[in-house]
Image (cartoon, rainbow, N blue to C red; front, side, top):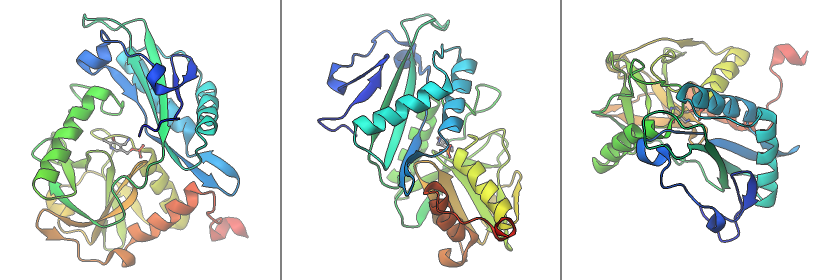
Length: 296
Ligand code: PMP
């Protein structure tokens, strides 16, 4: 992620990462009380476009608010700073990682200081292009009665690290996590959709990250006339699906080959997921032609 000449935005200024200093007394380091985002920019025919920048920074702001972390910028300022950062790094296709860390406070009360850092780097499709072999994790997603599951809090990601390592160590590509009620929740860093009899289903909000890619996919489905429903479903139901895929900013849209010992029977190329993967690519590149009804 680090390149010799890269520039980051840190504590109000653009600088080389070697010049930045971290706070050893930060609550983010000791207790996992920081919030972050994962955003992508794409080189489009209209120039560099940060995909859904406002939605990502709104989610960062929401996380800061619920965790009591001071948020000292407007969304517009942050979008503007991010475009400047991309330009300074000479990047058009990029992954952008803003992180808001807390100031010194070794008590369990929140600090009245925070530091914003924004980094960016070139990053291919996070989970690659090939279909994924997925393992159901022994770890559940964080429980909404013990934390704010829709906030992208650094500490929550120890759960993602545990489940991803568990899956990789057992010879799989990624983990699927259930929620506290035993329903399917999501992957460690992406949302899940399944296709059954030509209809798509994705878990309802409540126990999952409200993925921005997930809502983009739902919007595209509605515009294209694909049937999609947000509802809770079980692992047994997912293991009877025709096809399934994950969605996320880093992963984009990626198909599943198998889940534990269940192989999804529909070929990826014949699935709605595949069509949505292509449409999503067009959407982020501002190349999606208007749906038929709007075009006339
Ligand atoms: N679930 C989890 C646990 C995640 O970390 C992410 C990535 N933010 C997602 C889903 C997908 O969210 P988005 O589409 O907004 O990147």
